[in-house]
Image (cartoon, rainbow, N blue to C red; front, side, top):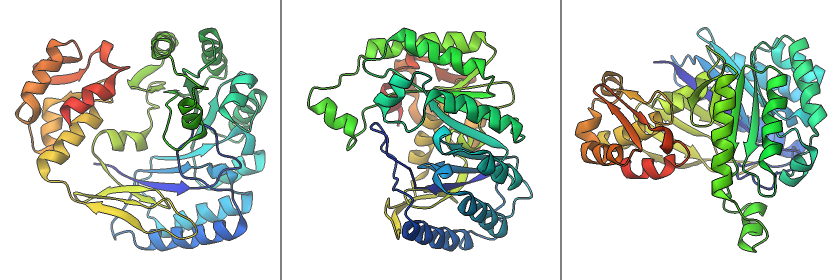
Length: 363
């Protein structure tokens, strides 16, 4: 099975009001300390680790200046055997992307971009706390194509309080007009510890779940009609353009994560780093007993629209899913939340928007 490498770049120009990911401003002393930690962790990777995918996430990787981006690319190439590399993704904010950074990324081996568009309405971008404007996303896409990127994804957020359905629909149409290879549509969630959470607690912000579901259902239909495959709850891709790195997470694959707040799964163990700078260490390490790990793998794989083939699940975990969770599967199928065929299970259409409730029954 393929393996992957995730590098957490914990820097942002400004934190968005909804975001709970670990990030800090890119101050020179913090960037220097981060590089030292990344070099240390990369040097500790086991002999024989040959990832098929690399993913730079954050934070905002493109919050680094061009010199530091080049340094990061050089460091990964020097410390990691990339002979089997099939996909190298970098997340990017249109407000921090320049032609010089794009040339640096493409020249350094990155072949896939994930652009955080989020919306094409400037009022919505302001509400979310984004630093960029809609025209900067359009410019970033044009510049990415000019730099030689043939695989570009766009992220959108739906269900934003106070944003009409028609505005989100216009966002999707604007994204389609840019002809990306991949689209992610994420439902706005109120994450603990964020400004949005504080606003919700004060009664200043309320999420309408019925409206969120209506936007989700509309987007699914529109994107499938436009030729995209809905391959995971929040993700849509042109044929052959599904994200390989995320596929590892959903199939129980192995990967190393380096950087503060990064997580790893390797040789039956998993661990996570604390979200701290300038230094960080492991926050936890655990080795799940086989049945618990299999239940977790079952749930993660059900995020994919194709679900689990029985033989594939048995090969991945050593368990048959009916032996593992037969009564729960039968009950969820009777409730119309799982579709069960003789050799495959998957989320039913009605369960896609309420998948967390289904997963809680299975894990």
